[in-house]
Image (cartoon, rainbow, N blue to C red; front, top):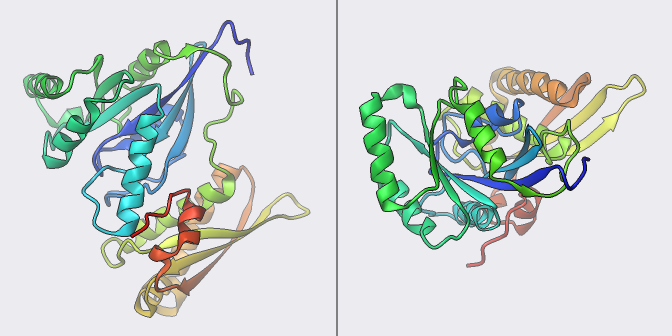
Length: 302
């Protein structure tokens, strides 16, 4: 930690519609994988904190679930979590996919942002997909709908504009001590991050074959005598048919998921990893309050 009189610190909520690129941007800002990235929408389910340094500033980013019109109980919990993250932040950063522009979801978010008192910044992502004149018009249209104190244009995937964004956000932080160690990039326990990494690999491997009703929990994390870690995880699915899809012919799909996950988990844990995956059917896990608590979500009643 550093001297309170010389440092600044604060929270920035990254919000936006699903697939705007929030997780990709967070990983770029932090310089490490702290949030799972997938082409599929709504993969981030809870608030993920990533920690970045800019000069004397410690910027704590909260990557929230994508904001959308909720239909299921899990959807409602995710959207509640997203707005909770925005309401508690020192700065609200709205990320919009420049190529998509302003759709119904974006317009609804802009309307909901109006009464929030925290300073708001606009980040246009995927700027390499539009001409400069189109980007300027889009930025102007959005600022007419909801005024922002600053507008940034970035390519989260390529990293373009990200250093300048971090520098400017650092200047917006308030005087105070850093809340995390200098080399810490996330507040998520390794057990949680490991489960999220495995869930990402399920998305990557199965694409559209499996619905979103999958959930991963790290059951055991045991450090062995040689310093390596034995990790046991359970993949919860909602139907027996889903279990067969995850396991695959002769267990090949599960083996592929485990191999990819083990590599990323070992990198995050900075040690050799022995990963064991189990698949269980829990038909109504999406209506189980215990599973919501495990994900850090509030269970919506009714």
